Length: 166
Image 1 (cartoon, rainbow, N blue to C red):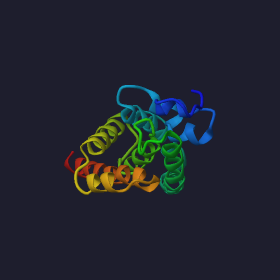
Image 2 (tube, rainbow, N blue to C red; image 1 turned 90 degrees about the vertical axis):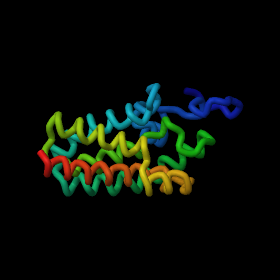
Image 3 (cartoon, one colour; image 1 turned 60 degrees about the vertical axis):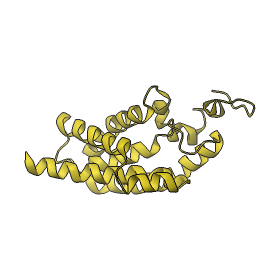
């Protein structure tokens, strides 16, 4: 992907050689079509579950907080570079959302990782209130990040309920 100001495709304005773009695009997973958010979420769970297992809950939570703060910048800068607010290829927000959702699973297992993935995607796609409110009204890097954090909270609550039921 070459940088060009005369192109109409916002993706042509990005480069995976740029560390900001590389991270914002989820190491390239946000470039996979169709459904880049789903591919970004899948990449996030494949990366996040082993990290959570290896470093434990508290360091993983610190990683999430740092990743959120970094994500506000990454998402805003990449959106500015593309000239499009919250382009589908920007999936760092899905990474942080999946990481938050992983905190709610009772154990690292295929079942719980799939449940976390599916529930997060459902809430990220349907955007029940107040997710839809923030998604429509906050046009900033923080806005790009916050709707996925809220989707993760809904998914986490659902995972707690699922664990309680089964």
